[in-house]
Image (tube, rainbow, N blue to C red; front, side, top):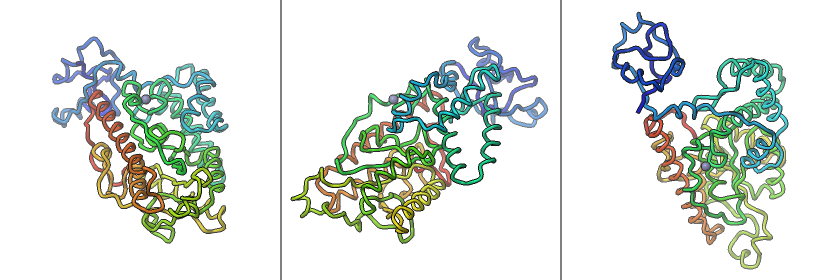
Length: 412
Ligand SMILES: [Zn+2]
């Protein structure tokens, strides 16, 4: 096994050439696999500073081969056809948003302009090198010329999505959003959702194509009755709102602890006409409008703004009445908690929240009898499957399996 010292290695002698010169590390760095420029620490300690720092503080991460380094360097989308196929796989909308396409073209044009191939790297697959700096400078400058907050949000969302698509192609599996070596698609057990139920994964743009996102598990495991809607992408939001308006306000809930007049618990949820047990005996399921549940998929700080955005549009659509928010009562952490600690039991990941919602609904008379508990089991298994894939990946690339608790961790 070779050792590659990556960003956390702080001790590199001057002049920095990419090969460690510390006595403690010399044996690893003499490997012919590692040449100049392989090691890219976030900053370099000079010889003088090194004298003041003990060697024991050196942090190293072991990797299996050079392929690990290459793995962090995806190749970018090569053609329009690939982009359209990828987009349809992600979002279930036929068209690629114009702004996303334009931003991707602008970014790809940097290759010719700067005479260097685009390189992506780091945990978020961001654009690196001169192209990365130029893209950031130009798009930030453009962002500041936008006068209203809606345009700014749409630009921000499109830029995030464009960069993630460019950076993920050839690197992440298009279905499970994991690096191809860690693909969990074959291990995933698929299930079904009651035909009159729709789940919407309302995703923050920063969570799009994230490896440890759990919102994606819902459509992977349950199919087309789960829809992705990226916040700030008008094509997605308009499609979602068209479906919600058609269903009607009494068929729509946002799963989020609102702590205000909109909040209700699942046990207090009143099913719309046609969904109570007596009526169901005489009404065919297919004649009923689907019941829509919106799962908020973002960090807890982002979620608040996302729910406000939903409420604003709900008020505009339903004459100031807003959207009811469902508060859940989970009694255990999800299996992914060890990898991505949750701040509290109520602030669980998106997939676990969906599973909890189905279990609580299954306890109510209006929703009993549709095997929602079995669907919840399928979701739990999908979360376990992702958790195992992420653990396997961390072991493979020599990263710690568990992470320390953060104050505001992901809800996705
Ligand atoms: Zn996969």
